[in-house]
Image 1: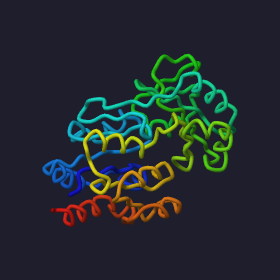
Image 2: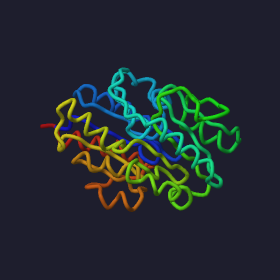
Image 3: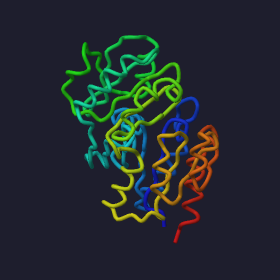
Image 4: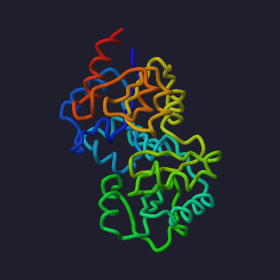
Length: 264
């Protein structure tokens, strides 16, 4: 029987209109009744996720900031922070990237230096709490990750600026305009493996859904790995199963099928 289910948000559980299908909440109740842990695993900020799931937040898990911050039933489970000196080096490099903006993702809030209208619109999609500051390097907060919002495309533009850090840090293209840099070994997959160990959940009793490159490790951390129909081709190559697209309520439909197949 399935004991743990994690899903990415953007391009996965959320449709193209940034909505959670109403049928999700009925399915969530079934998971709750069967003591199946449900986790939202996302590059989004914890506070943003908690607001999206406000009605059920106290009964679920959040694997936020690409696996660096995990909360279950309102209680912190663990944090995988980024060294502050390294974070400041990344900030300095990020400032040099053309058409890209740096976000310092802290435990208390997200921090930005630039009050650009287009950039702010993107920040407000994913960060419930953010502050505009004069200098990111002197912000007093525990650093979870450094993120670039790259309007020229993170895979082709900003990604290579951080090649020298890829052996020692986790550099992830997490969306078309998003690049996330975290501590080595800080990703959704590592977070899920830690959670499975903590709750004694076997690999074959866990499932996950994703659509982009920041979901690669998550696919490997569970047996029931699902790539959405709209997923990046590289993710489809590593996932065992496929789900209908995010605009066809693919996650909820697949969970319902899983529940039927794993009643015993």
